[in-house]
Length: 165
Image (tube, rainbow, N blue to C red):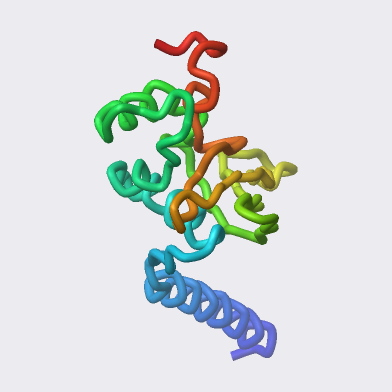
């Protein structure tokens, strides 16, 4: 066998090993888990994870009942999520990561990094990253969500101003 053939076989074997390693890493990665519910970061993480898992009753439980347009029930919450699916990224491939939290008295702001993936061409990475905020307040010793840039309906804050029913 020529040295160039051995070199080519080595390259192909290396590529196969890399592909196998990538599959193993992907398949053995643990599923995202819920976090403790005693911090704003934990509540934001759990709310977003519940939405991704379509555990809408759990996601609904993280909203503050003091919201102007607070949904009457978990079923009403689900209906509003599905009616505004573009705000909740229901049909989009996304990865979410809670980055940081700032707490001032009984209010907190949590920064979340969202990476959205889409089909792309040769010169486009196929990913768009956005950082958005989730606002929480302390209600009777529990952190509850009162506003957010995404994954939240504006009808819950201002039921009159957004054409909400």
